[in-house]
Length: 279
Image (cartoon, rainbow, N blue to C red; front, top):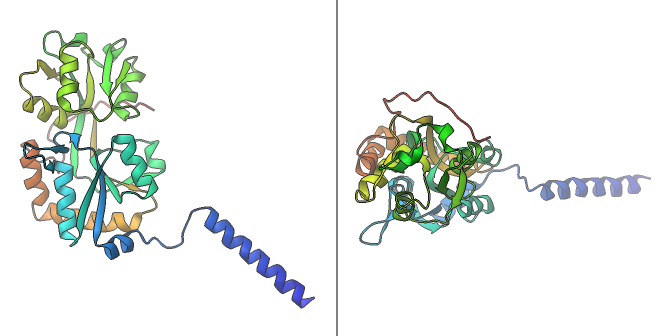
C-alpha cells in the first residue's frame, strides 16, 4: 500500500512540474542574468523614425532612443546590438525573446500593457497632426478626420485613433519621413497623427515639403520609454536604474537637446488637457 502511495505521489508531482513548464512561467526571473552573462544588449528599433531612430548622412544608426540605449549599455558595461524591424516586428521580437527591449518612441496602450511594460520615461510629449500648408487638409479638429486619409504604420495607436474618428487608413511598412510628408503634400494622404516633437523635427529637417503641424490642436499628454516583455522585470529594473543615473548626471538632457533642441526628458511647460482614446 505504501509503495502504491509513493508511486501516486510521484505521478502527482510530475503532473505539477509538467503543468508549470507548460504554462511558460518560471519562478525565477533571469532576464538580467542572461544579459549580464552575454555582456550584450540586443535592442529592436526601426532605423526610419527621425529623430528617434534613423541613419545619418554617414549611414550610421543614430537618434534619441538609439543614443539613450547606447548610453544605458555603456553605463552597464555592455555591448549593444541593434536589430531593425517595423513596429509590429519590434513588438514581436521582444515577445519572442529575440530582443531584450525595443527602442522606438514607444508609449503604452491598454491592449499592449497586457503583455509588455515600459521603462521609466525617457521622453515626455503630447500628440499632434501634420496637414497640408495650403488648406490644413480641411481639418480643424479631431472630428474633421472623418473621411480623411490618415497615414501611418498599421496597428499603431495613432492609426487606431484616426480610424475611430472616421479616417481611412493608408498604411506604410517602415517608410521614411520624406515619403510620409510628401504624400500629405501631394494629396495622396491628408493627415499624420503622431508625437509632437517627432513631427516638429521631421518638418524642420524637410522644410521644402509644404506641410505643417496643425496649430493648437494638441491632445494626449504622454511619455515614452523602452518596451519590455512584462515577465522581464529584473532586466527592466536594471535599465531603470541606469536611466535614473543618466537623468541625474545630465546625459539624457544632453542627448535630448542634440535631437530635439529642448529637454524632452522632463515634462513640457505647455499644458495639454484633451485626452482621447482609440480603445
